[in-house]
Image (cartoon, rainbow, N blue to C red; front, side, top):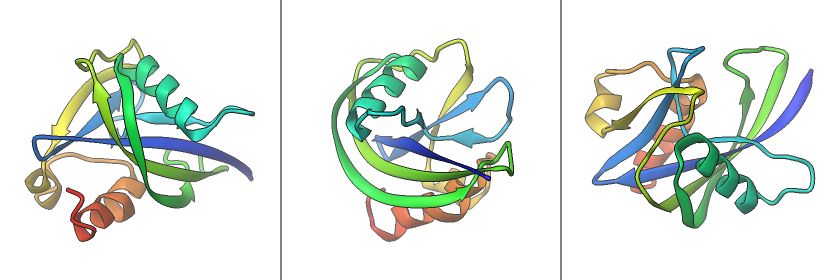
Amino acid sequence: MQTRTRIAGIIIQNGEILMLKGKRYKELWTPGGKLEEGESDESCLKRELKEEIGVDLINSKFFGEYPGKSFYNPEIVYDQRVYIVTIEGGVKPDAEIEDFVWFSKKDFETKKYSMITINEEQIIPDLIKAKNW
């Protein structure tokens, strides 16, 4: 079993969370990606936000750590560190991103969209409990 560290950014604007949809998977996920060797969490967030959605990181606040299996490969276990982030710039998804959605609490409650398990079962409920959303 392979373990990877993923750094994720929760972007909340106007009461909605930015979620991404890739070309290979129908489930939504939060922006972020694999922490490279020697890279800090903040550097990873800056790089991934710029690469995936073309925005600049203004600041970040640690929210929580979430271990779990990869949604696309059961042989990979992720240690996902999640930050609530403030960004600058308009969202412009890169070629790997098919679409993006501003996701509301109502969308979550009505299960309007399918999302990766760790978001649906852990991160989003924790955001609601913590009143960060």
